[in-house]
Image 1 (cartoon, rainbow, N blue to C red):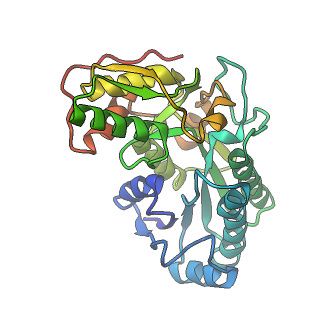
Image 2 (image 1 turned 135 degrees about the horizontal axis):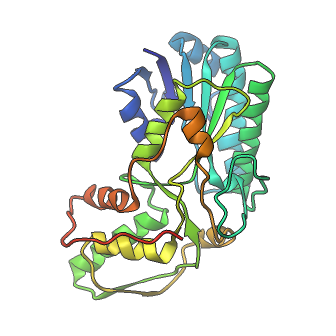
Length: 308
């Protein structure tokens, strides 16, 4: 079995990736205290990689809130350090980086965006991910090491960060049910998103540890469908058994970044061809897993949400 070094194993994606890799690889997943990619100096990181002797390094570390400087440190600088460390200490290893659909920026409504579509991010977050992706591509194309970037769309599942919109809705529905409230107030833009189950993301990472990589070093990981954000919120409420109204309310602090990209949907042709992977869970499955993670089963049958 492959020896895999997973970095960022304590995060939302990292925990699910680790759970899947543990059953199919010899997995090493240092804690953040043992390996903080932002703070760790290059010689120390190089020594860590040399000790672990991995066949594959998976970088699932990063951040979703912060300043432009925070994002550059978390995505660009850490990727540059990893490329240097892995190319020196484990030159035969594959480096798998978890990227983001935010790298694309605004795409035409109705388009399932492919990896060769021009990337023009509209946020510091997306720009930092794109810069890190370009570093990984250049390293791979130059033959310094084997690289692949999984451009993950909007992952959904248990353990979502508190700042995520669906995590906020989950908390609001629980509070409303506990307090006997008949409705919740939430600021929602008219956006469409490709929501992919976190278990499918983890399966894609496993596939990336095994597949052959050529010139196509960036691969979309999504559901291949776009759903209206308002419909997703309603579906989550239905999964929770909450029949109350969802009325207009205050927008979250990061809502402006989301509103700047009205539509996003992944083209998965390359994922099927390069990874041999396709998503296995639908949106209702994902939201049910998110809700049940808090110990509350759905109370009534739920209909699916229409894709946009």
